[in-house]
Image (tube, rainbow, N blue to C red; front, side, top):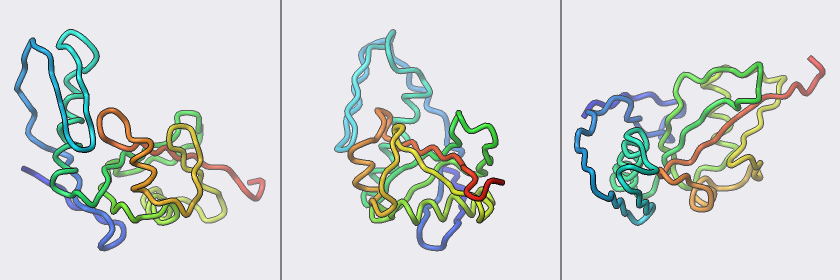
Length: 159
């Protein structure tokens, strides 16, 4: 398995699994995927596509290998017209990481100017900056096992 190491802050982020071998197992029967963290059921002609199944398998693999960590996908908000692109969108963070610490990591990754405010949304909600990622993950994880975080900017000095 190929892993790429990319750390913003030493000791906080784990390697991402950017290039893994594709899964070639295909069936025409009902697919049941169960783990302590996710439970998804879909018929072969129905709800889950190959990409979704691959993401479910990746999240299960990450949660089994790192039970004290959370898989995140960070992406710019679709409504932010001046979005700063992020060079790496998949992260594995400790459950004890706060949103403030995650925000600092994102600011460094996108080279965000200090005079602008950065807002992070999880399921279109803003959480307190002192909230733990693990608690937010348990309440808001997607069906594929990842927590999706979107960010956008707002100028605080009228610039």
